[in-house]
Length: 416
RNA sequence: GUGACCAUAGUUCAGUCGGUUAGAACGCCAGGUUGUGGCCCUGGAGGUCGUGGGUUCAAAUCCCACUGGUCACCCCA
Image 1 (cartoon, rainbow, N blue to C red):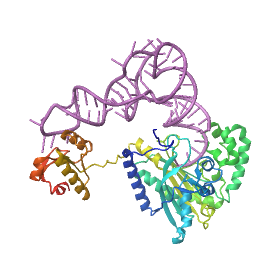
Image 2: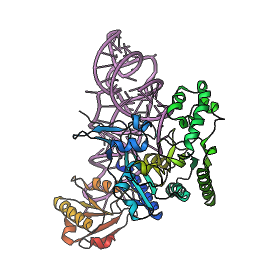
Image 3: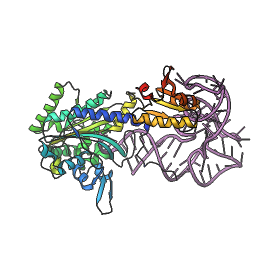
């Protein structure tokens, strides 16, 4: 019986983990400069947390969640996204009581049972950022800046920032009705998919990829033109701030977020280096969500970004290749006694934090040299009977080929 | 959930009209010096041609089913 990883999951192999670690370091660093603190929540939660926050009728909830009942008959779900868990933890641990504004970020695996394709996996990784406690449009802009800075620090500059406003509880219901009425008039010109969207998610019709849908809905009213005074003011402030910061953006009145909890600002960052799943990050404001999850009414804004998609862009761009870990020195023993000595010495060097390696296969000198070369060791020391007797050996610089005689006892000195 | 394409050494691939022993490159192992790597040369190991069935004198090659993968729709990061 040969086992395989579950469909839509994959191993991140050593050749890739170095790149991952590099990306993770950049994420942590940028978030530190923006004064956000990391939160780590469980990967599974009560199912109701997600149905409540993401929306009972969204596709994620109706057909993509990994849910099961545990042995105590409780329904639990592998998290499909990070915001719900983060807010649950925020509420449960009264984080809002420690200050007016709480800035959090998370990073880790998410789970959705979708058909895998380019840029879409069943277990995938996201990092996400949340700012809780303020309605300020500045924070909406801060979210966009964080994402853009992480990308540009990684050498990804060919991104597009798209923004929209999806309104609030004051203005959205009326607009939704208006839109539904207009869409019903066009119903027979729409694709079957869009026809069924009219009832349960009319906003979705607007960002259909179907050319006919696009054509049929060119003149349909957009949310951004039917905002209440407050939402309109908020949206224009966001735009003004972006302009002050010389950030390029485009307004797309058809941009819709897939999760129900968004209000006012919605944004997306896309890359043309990706396939049809071209969103690198997406987010927006969610002023009602904390209350919806049982907390005190608390405004919030945030975004989530896919790490695998980021990796795809990095690879395509040939982004900086982080150097593989290399031994500083490779110790070669020529006979049983010398190999034994080499192993012990290797361990002692490591104890002093000097990356050292030796041979475990009792191989020939030639084979060991080849191995040292393959591993790109900076130095090699060859030890045999003579060296053990005299207590000194030749230290070979593998780049220049130069050799110098060194004391075996003081080897660490020569390697600093 | 729907559709299209694909599946041959560890990896990337070639394999003609169905034809007898399935190849290449890279990688791996060993040798070319007796105590020195890379480049070069020589040799070697490594394959249930995804699985099962069918057609045929003969199947990696044609047909069917299954499994897996990829891409797109859908959805979304």
